Image (cartoon, rainbow over the protein chains, first blue to last red):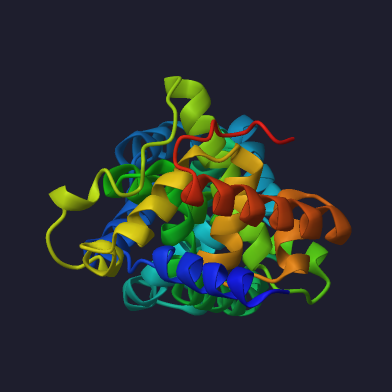
Length: 116
Length: 185
């Protein structure tokens, strides 16, 4: 390669310097991820109360948990983990904790799955 | 067992966080040079990581240990292509926006007052898409031929030729500013 080309490539490298993202971008990213999972919170809680009384609807969250083991699970787990400590304080025993955690999984999986 | 999942997924989340921290600048830089303004570059960056997050587990599985940067840049690449298609826009000159942004972005400060660098950036913006994208990957992100080939879904050989032609065309454009872009294919 000629030194002319090398010089030009050096100029090109200088012109196309990497650009630091704005400081607010990371905060915005985290907010977006949280918002994504918070969006349907109210609707879900209403849905859960109405639906879980009817055993015919129990398959839906169970299926969501099963399917949620796929690609969207990271979001689900992130949210469930963030709430796990609070659940532990609320639960009187291990069975209660397991039930609450399972419910969290069902909710979060269902929240993430519709747009897949 | 669903209840066992968090333990293994905790590592998945940690790896995604690491991927984000390591490559957010790459994705932002690529988006900025593709789109030409900071606002939309932020949007593309954000969308890139959201998509990456949703498909991260599969990407890890299919990457077979190879670096995930080309996969990430390919997501940004496709989103940028959709951005133009949806809005029927053409890329803005990367330098066009520079005067409006004051401090934190080093490129504007660097290029300011350097006519040769300005003309290079203007030339890059006028290159055919595939050549421009390859140059951004090589010179802004420091990707090697293999990484670029994976990001652009080409062979290593085709990528090498693409880069060579892109540099040659840009060099001609910069030395003869009146040259019509994209006419040497």
